[in-house]
Length: 270
Image 1 (spheres, helix red, strand yellow):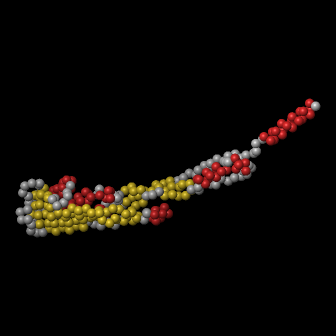
Image 2: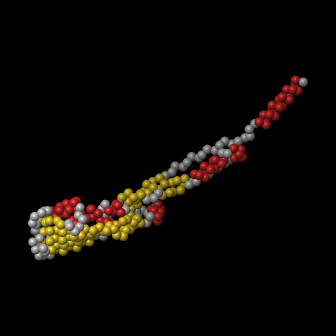
Image 3: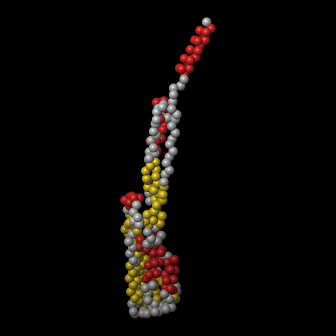
């Protein structure tokens, strides 16, 4: 009787163990290691054609301008800054004329015209490097030109003999900002590798790590989709050179000084 009870007990325990044993399940998948991504910063240049300043200078023979004669600067008809006034004074002194601000003088230098006007934008063309690369070809197709604001500056002056009222010299000069600032525009961009299918790989791992999927892939070989990379280029970022209206406007004091210096240098002093 005791033996029969023991046999029944062993049978019940063994049967219960079979019923409660968990089904086999595969280990969860881990995210694959990401590849090493390359990145590099590159530069491209843009250039345009430049024109020489337009200069007209005429000196009449009625009166000879000689060293150490006096000149008074008159700028009633133009808006001349204090800085430009001093620059004109220095330019006259450099050709051996004495600048005075009161009293009787030999000559009067009148600033008749001092004008700044925005004109049509200047187009800068991309400059090919010594060796053309696929990256440059891509940039050249996306950004073949850069358009920049452009100012035209004009200056006209007249030197008058005070005693007679005769005009002994007059001059006019002009230049555009692109021709004045001759350096190329320089832009930078970043060329980098990025993973194009990261979401696909992540979704695959999550799906395969559900309990149902882990039970289904017991004793099965599973290949995780490999990461794929593509090359991506950033937008261009300007490093050098004036282009927008604010940057171009900042050139105007130097342009005016340049034009006035050219003209005063044309006055023949004996």
